[in-house]
Image (cartoon, rainbow, N blue to C red; front, side):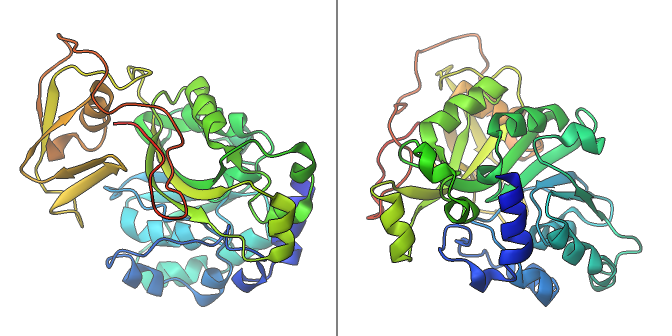
Length: 347
């Protein structure tokens, strides 16, 4: 299947218009500050974009970011502007043709950004085997990925390697495609369905369990949307399986609990994160307004206190007391259905 994916993205697809579904190209509505950054990216790089979300977490200045499955480099070059000349963005991809496009325009982007040196690096290899690319333990602040992990044959290895290279308090912030049930084996062998980011999608509950098993104890859903397969032939082959584009953030924090536990804690957001003066969206269930005391579970408290977000919050409480499960926690599919109605979720 790796060879099929390499051929699909290296030879079959020459630009975004060659995709047969919208699964690999469902970009979010772009925030205003992102549009001028995209305008700085070379047109050839933009036309080879195959992402399914927006992978731009907050507070990136000066950080080292790793992009898993960077393709022709669209997200790398947007992130390069946000980390600045003192930061670094490393792109990894297994498709030589895509990397050739990314590397071809490296000098162009350095000049357009006004940097005295390039702050990007592109590596040819597999996202399941970052160790073969000499990426050291605890060497990366943030890992991003845009509609690529579904294409990996060993998704557990991807998550384990991500945990290894992340610094303590770092995060894996990525968009991908998920399904509402496990994909039948026969469909996983279909090169077109796999290349279109459908038959390699993880059943959402298998993903949550795999993430926890890999060391990311409390995956947080940031946003999601149902995917429509606007191709009658492919839709008939997938039957009643429903697919979703979703963005998750997974923090590398050793003390996270398996459930959202109530310790009587709260935070106040100072409104000091660039581009987020009024509120910070930690995840789909935590929009924290500036200046207002906001109750949080122990895990959310750690995600803010033990990470790069700390200086932007005031913290109240500790872990001396315990009041049971945080109100609102539950199980069930976390995504919205086609009508926008949420099916379930956590606190």
